[in-house]
Image (tube, rainbow, N blue to C red; front, side):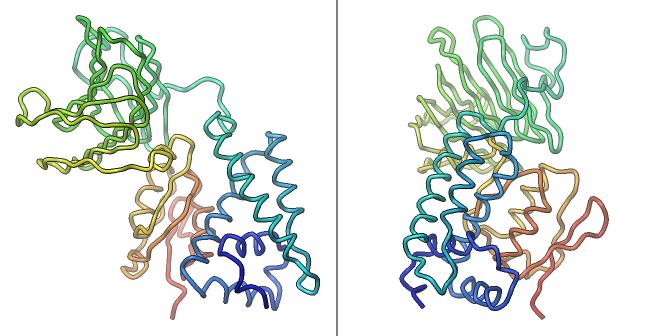
Length: 345
């Protein structure tokens, strides 16, 4: 066979283009290919997840056309030379991947013309620090336009308190996760307080996550400084450049490290990316986006590692996808409870 001269991505493109994986001997050959290496399993997960996006892009003529083109570029049966078609399939899938990335950035998959504010208090509360002004619950996200033109994207289970008064633009992230697209105003810096820190910007884009007291700030554009909040332990301000992240545990000093901005902001497009993370950790994050929940009772299943890009809000699809690359299957206990169990005996 010529399989050994293919990269994992090219081989994944070949398998993805076939429509007979449920038949012998293709089923057994595909299973053997998955078992050959972790690279093969990662390539298959990424290719498979890309096609899943097409399920939600039926209203885009461009995406539909590219999907058809990539599928038509698939390899011919093994009895015929398939190398040119295989290369075409790989190129087509790569082209679709690039198009999907651009489309996601331009909002092709946003079905709602107007953002929905999940909860908001009286407008007067936007001038003083107090209770939360904007709140999202489980499975809910919201885009909020603040009075100065700043746009805040709230992730699930998040809350912010806004105080615009006396020439100041102050926001507190009480819990959860938010992305800030700050309206430029040099005379009035924009400050976000979270977990004893203050992130200050003039006009920029940055992401702030606050979970279990742990803080992470990722800078996408512009510049920000991270300093201690008033009354906290004094520490010199830390300045971030685009592509950098600041992370701190409760009571910790914090550190700056490189960040993959696309990965950090994937949640805004309704997807999450995992890189060699425990399955329990992946499930914990995905459970935040749905009423239905996945449980893992087997400690060995919980410690399995997962890599790939997955849609949020659809745990059944996640169960199907993860069962393709890990020795697990998902069983339903009731309409809102699913369990990942081992297929190993």
